[in-house]
Length: 326
Image (cartoon, rainbow, N blue to C red; front, side):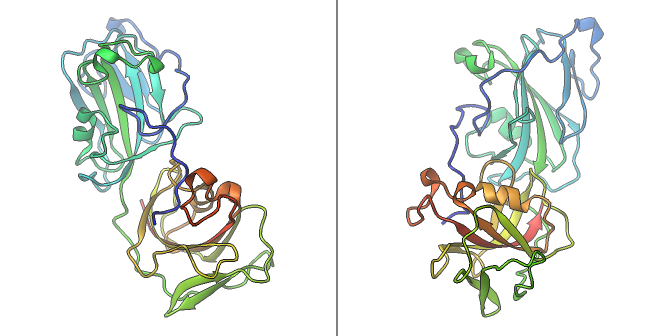
């Protein structure tokens, strides 16, 4: 069984892996061609400034002349590289090169980064190819011809007419962690600083085995208790995190999933890929930590996305060990 999923949003057929807002943003600041310098690259008529992890500032002399699909790395990251068929997290902004208008961006309010692989057919082929080998922290700029973008169909939902070339700004914000701790082993529960009555983590052979909720009132809100506080890097809201975990329906005798005796799981956080309880609970947590997470139904599995054996109304208890953080 996979890491607890959030019900999947609609998938766009071309560039973006996640459904983004229907509204198209305003003009990016198109200017006369003579006013534009080819800063941070040599694509004439196009300037991209700013650092990866924040929305780019893009100026272009529209209509931008795009005679071929081209890629430039304007910021070279120093982290681990993107590898073929490997999950990574991307921030992506797209402009119509004919009009100079921003079409859509994962940096826009209400949007989230994308957790993708270069082999899963959710990116333009040119972008997929360009991203392989790029290191975490890199920013790429691509000019993509109409034929290599949306072709004769265009993308009217983004204001892109048939045949329009596009400009993409792609930030590689996370790749799988390269430093992963071994299993944390037996750590015990410890006392809750808030003095609450908590479920008991039952261990077997030095590892979490199940969660005993007997005699404890079912919570009506998210409860996150640090059982162990690590000292490594903290989880961001665009991180890939390596975890050991078990999940158990409140009152059940045994977990529905347990990785403590298997391989750890790689989890994207902050990209609408896992249950909302995990997105809320893990941001800010440091590598080497163990959490007890008690998730009410509205933040755990929903009926549309629950595994068959788990009712949509279930409260879920988790033990999560954070072993690696990108």
